[in-house]
Image 1 (cartoon, rainbow, N blue to C red):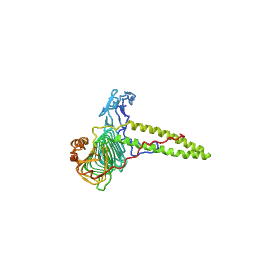
Image 2 (image 1 turned 135 degrees about the horizontal axis):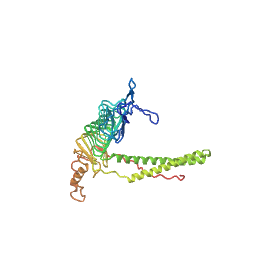
Image 3 (image 1 turned 90 degrees about the horizontal axis):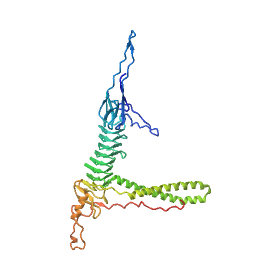
Image 4 (image 1 turned 90 degrees about the vertical axis):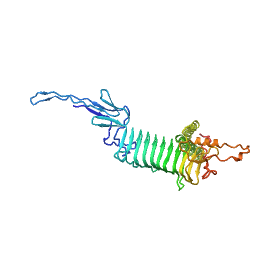
Length: 448
């Protein structure tokens, strides 16, 4: 009997395996046709040849048994053989390929054509490239990066590196999670969380974009939705002539901002629930005194509310402690700055530093927006490169235009800072009133 190789993992070409979840549901888009390989994983074992069985001639003479031929496994890319070349192990992540006698592990998955039910959802330890489209309801996850040449629908795209796509129409449920830079031609109704820069060729429309780098639209517009970037925002056109509201926030590190916003919202929710419980206690106590038949039921309800009160108080203490101990991170690359190369349209809401204002009339570019740290509001300046820090520009303006001494006889000769557009705050309105306080103290019920 000849030697042979026993694979311990699945390779492309295996029949799909469908798995039911806890509720018995089966996702037909998840096929489990390949094993996701990790470093040092055992891939298979070479079985040695065996002695054959002796035979007999027609005259009854013995025919000696011959020993089988050994199987000579060839270690290809990403594979190492150990223990006298009998056991194969992976040297890197990816998927296993076994062709003739060569075993390899590759960290690149190439799909020629569209992603469909024959391929299914992708969860791959490596780089994924798709030459076609990705229809609605599919997901692509890669530990390194993703490149999709075609159009993406309402899908989930997740990469541990950079992502390059044609365009995506997410229908407000599609999401991109990118640990590197994101490059796209067009984004519409798409939620993006990017720990790098976002570069779009043509347009961002009605999307929620969060970036720890910069957001740049090279040729077109940012219309509708909300864009948050730590290192600034730039596009030819900001907003639209239809006055659709477009929120632009620059100079904010969104992970910290999201966490703080969540804590403040949760604190408000806890206070609201505590208030509702407190308001329910009085009527329940009166009902308990008025109706003997309902004493047990009312007492049970009071016990439940008391336990809920204690849990909420504990959570409130934890949230308050985290808020008190947390401080926003400071980044040298922080750049609260927005560039409009052609037009800044009415309806755009700009948030730079402490300035939060809504543009009321269309303004022609090219222009740069930064915070006016002296007088409040925004500065509308002649265009400067996005990589030039807003803090440097503001420092130069303040240095060139010192605050006049009111006691000086020449104080009336002081003029506006250099570089600002003439007039006082043209084209925008004051910010709306602030949010309500969230730290309201509620009275303790005597019966708890």
